[in-house]
Image (cartoon, rainbow, N blue to C red; front, top):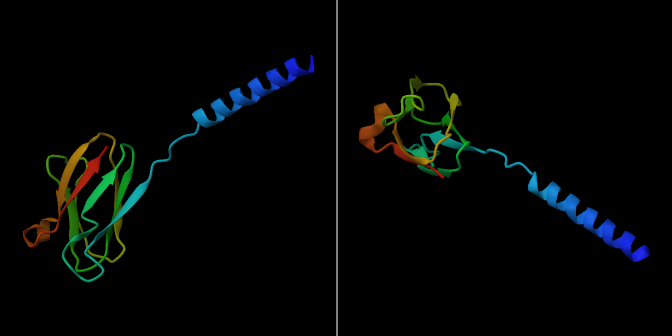
Length: 119
């Protein structure tokens, strides 16, 4: 009788662990991208970002304003307004997998471009 109760107890414990581990939710993350490097370069820092669907990219004005972020063919992700104040920021959440190229309109010719890869 005791061995049956132990077996039932072990089975219940194993079942609880399966439910507990199986229901843990994955938290979406936010990746910060500086507009203008700390060294004062006209670049996004980082310029290449790899995230998962549902994650967010936060763009923060850093140096040598004005900056924005325009995504080729994705007006819904673009932020065409220029950021002038240090620390000014906005966020964009990426819900679909794909590769999204972006640039700063005033500094695209200087090479201020980037890519978000969403897995």
